[in-house]
Length: 499
Image 1: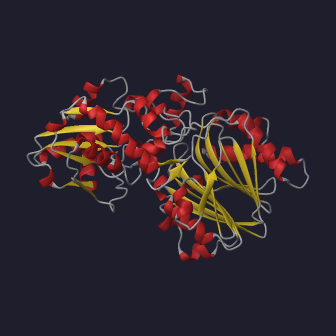
Image 2: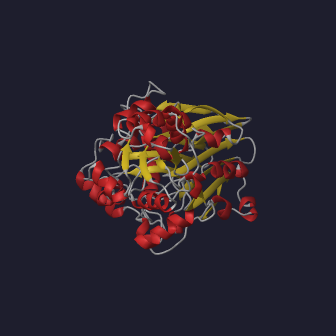
Image 3: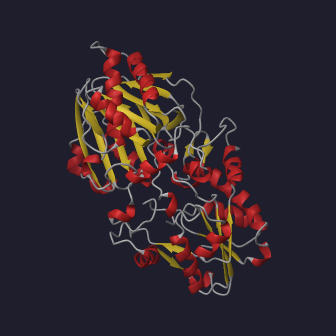
């Protein structure tokens, strides 16, 4: 999962891209990069770390030009600890192309072989984004056949990219001397939207990057669509997929996206409120509300769901955990005792909200369950009589192959376990999950034009239709495992999640 942005403007874009990346920082904190173009020359700076740490004044001064791209990276494929895999990626032919990518290619290894044997292109990293860049470059070269580039050539190239590439991809590329290209996979799994400001066209992963930089959200890039903005700011668009269908990743609404974003016509905040409503009905069927004294969210993205649930059940809503926003990565050896220490470094209880009470803890989702178990114990240590736990998302039973780094199936607490078995492992007095249909209805009702979602980590249905058990095993083998790299986090290394 990553955050990407592309800009064509009548003014220098380095500060604008920097500001947009800050607004997308929640989508990745491992690396950041910006590339700009001036007089057909690319100027690039990228490194591991957060946006504020990667870009100093001297770096910003070295990024001139009125056109550029940026990315914040959270790796799910390749080598997470290699700075050379930070994006953007560059290839010098044809024309010179740089690219940023959010998503995950499920056929990257097969494409890598094709590129070497048939297309005679060299891939120098383990990143599927470099593979995607070279596929795009090869197809643009075929489309132009040595002639000057026209927008239709770009669309023809993207059309062939769709035929070759499988998986999820939201892409922004810059072609030297011509403009910025953006396109989205035929299922629209990963988000991409377009907005305008004074003399500027901006494309980004989430609407918050537009609105937070004084741009107006104009529309989403459609699944399978390609958008080309020339250096004069003129926009060209064309559908390039044969059978596009919008199936956005539902986990974006559950957890990944910022609550102030609107994605594919759905307010993320309202989606989380709706999840709280449907979860309230699940709670009633499991624990009578009169046996609950207080509803407490686990910071941070569960707050809208928890507040809505509490209101509907007529229960007090309280903040019982304080999150230390400045702990960041702890770079300690993995293991249960270490993970326990890490949770208590990041969360602290307000004991008065727990003592002598039956508390309902609400989280956005439960993945491994190790952090949930520790949080339940923290509530008991603070004096809670009973600890109930509710998840605004259904059980995570299957791995994600479309760009969200999740554990292998055996590491998922819900894989091949009943809710009662999960409850016993977590140690709570009752465990209430959202159901899959309820989740889809709660979010889907906000945009009737969306007929389906990728909810593969919940229901095991992979919308691209090309994923086999063998594919999952292979992708898991290549998955970036946080436990192997020294990050104490057992799942997404993002600032607002319980695990």
